[in-house]
Length: 417
Image (tube, rainbow, N blue to C red; front, side, top):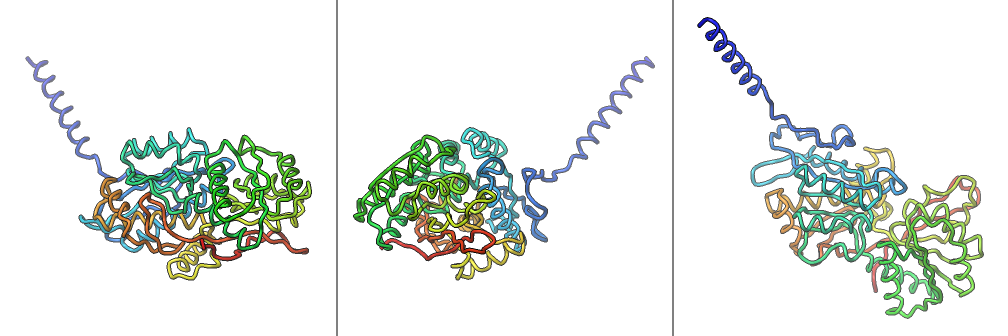
């Protein structure tokens, strides 16, 4: 009998301790920085007790295209810091701070899919990313099938966005870039042009198609066209020998900066091509990949169509962004910073328009083509496919004898005429 009483008392004590332990559990939010957000990027605004709305971010934070991802990350984090400092996002149930969960796709399509699936598994419904058209194209079907909204800051392939789906962008599309490039060539009086591109890459091949179509519309003769099979090709001498033989005055080169700086530009010049090398937004940051000891004069007459230039930052939003970015990071922003920053503010505007942060509501708000967004890259509305209607900028590189390095320059704003 005594043994039975002792056992009963023991079980009662265990039950009491168990209940006490359960009652001690807190509802503190988990760290949503993804291990990469700087201090303050996900801070709640003072006095705000609402749950944080966590955005996902996907981009190449490591690998050969890491410059793109790190700049996108900086733009996202700066926007979130500013928004939280001014009260967060105002929804129908009150104000909410923003946070971010960041994933590295390494510039690889498979890793990008893994990153997207991981964000969805964590309950993320609003994503910024990815950086390249190839990676972004790998996750558009995931976004649409899972009902997850995605805004790519820099995925330009036309096929990425279609009417009434969950994928949007803050950049213009490749067909528009191709048209702007041809418009520049026509305005400058070039009549014989060539193309060197990668046939296996979504971004490069899409831009080639757009450029080719626009040449036909505007009467420019394509005198030579050459391709490579990989965006990691390191030898372009044969292709440019044919450009020289064909008499091309300008060659369209839709590659990324990691090819342009160390390989394509110096090799084109080495075989005697002295004309214009004209690329698209992927050429931005070429100056970061120029080999030590290179002949810097060969980077003259290298131009590219771009989304944004700090030198043309005349609007209040754009000027304020430049000042805020320089104060935060101690450097000048580029177009990837600006487009990612814009993506976060577009999300904020859409959430506040619909009063909610769930994917279905935000998608419907973004699909409203009458909505107007005031961004660093100008004021725009989305078209029916979720692509901004806006103009572009022509940028390039310049070097003069005695300069310490190559200078990135803004040539002019460009639009279709």
